[in-house]
Amino acid sequence: MNMKKEASLEDILREHALHFLPAKSLCRFRTVSKGWDLWISNPFFAHRQTTYFKNITGLFCQVASLNPSFISFNKDAYGVPDPSLKFLPEPVNIRTSCNGLLCCQSFVDNVYYICNPVTKEWKMLPKPSLYHGAEAAIVLAFEPHPLKFNESYELVCAVTFPDHPVVYFEIYSSRSTSWRVSDTICCELDSWELHNGGYYMKGVVYWESSSGVILAFDLNDEQYGILPLPLTGGQFGALTMMHGELCYILPHLQDDDCTIYIHGNMDMSLKSVINLTCDNVGSKFGFCRALTCINDDILILALGRKVIAYHVREQKMELICTSDGGACTRYLPYVNSLVSVRHPLVRDRA
Image (tube, one colour):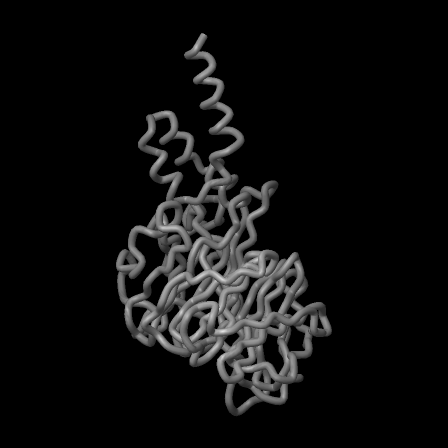
């Protein structure tokens, strides 16, 4: 009788609980038994875990051309086995991330790699048709869905040329394993310069422009749009999603106080204002910079050398870590996922 109860409890855990856990914990649970190992390594389970576990678990960060590192929000539950990404065939710069996948670019030939840092799986992409360069405006788009097992990812690059005020869109698809240049061309920007850290949400890619607007590109119909950017926008703001809505988080530093302005909707109107003081973290900020995040109730901020999580609902600030980098450090949000780069969940015919 006890054995039946234990078996029933095990079945309940496997069917209804495991897929809500981060990948690091699941990799550890594979050692429980042969049955658990087979269950967790099953591609259908990986699909469920990828679609149900979407909370940010940490930040990949990189200073200049040094090796990347990983800031875990919970070292026991989250983390990656090789934060410096040395499992890749050459040194890389981290460029963009989305739902457990990470896109990197090699130092020498600007080769793109797509990888899952948890499983150490990776794929080298073919060379694009257009010249992208080391600071290309690329965005990784991957949106797993419970009813779409053969989901694919796309890497989108907004290609600009200094002598021509136009933007071309070149797209890599894991479904076709190739690049193609979209027929859509944007000629409406006053300046060709785009910030290289774009943002993907619900089928649309967004880039900040030095023209003071946001360039949006819909991956479904491959049409572009222009959205307003808050007048005081700049290098310390960030596009993100809060409660299912596109938002722009804009910090403003004055003396020892940092004010966070949250803009939203398609007109980027002001939604709310948050006031922070250096007393909350025990030191002066130096600078205040918003980081892209994917949790509805958490804002991630770089305040000087400190990385802070601000819990909006609780109005509480939490120190995540103290970084060695400065204002130029690149941070990418990361989700601890079992998604496979080479499995049909991320469709790849190579």
